[in-house]
Length: 266
Image 1: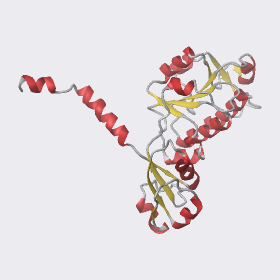
Image 2: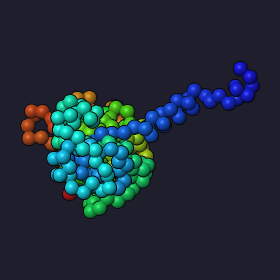
Image 3: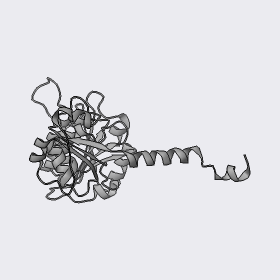
Image 4: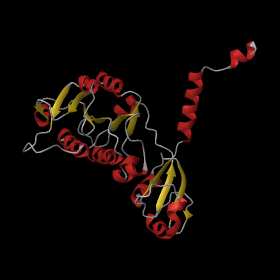
């Protein structure tokens, strides 16, 4: 190897980073179901690539916002689109690029329409796309600015997530960050109070919220079973619990998020 070749060769970590960037740029998502496809078509921020529909679904979609559909027979739809066998697609699928919401500070400090107080949700290792879809829907209903999750060990944008979100994925920021603990520290520096939710919390959530009237909040929740990681819990300012009428179990994480968002947004 001569000196010129040696000097021009990039370090392996640079090559891997460039490969990852190219792979991310090439990543696409197939959204399915009339509601999810209709909302994605109406979203000007969504980069749309292919629309595959049956004739019946096309008649029900309405405005295609400039997209030219590929019409296929319902009997061969599953062969025309790479969806999981259990996907309830209703004869409509749209290939898109993932949404880009901006940086953590841009999203966290952006005022949401009609919000009663700055409110965020952070999820620690919640990997079920149905749970995250339901949380996005609740976050939109109760005026949260964003749902934040780690890039690894959390559900990415998928058709199943979008369908469960019932259109909220197109409007409710879902920000996946490289390091959740670091993101939580950044939020504290922005003035957010971090409230972790756990069944072992000493203070009931409604009681804690009474002492934090008007303060910017980030509700932090972990996956069902393992809950929040130790570092995540230590980063929180408070650990609270949702009070139950009896000691018979706990709420699903998406139900807990809905209850906590409702209480925090009042």
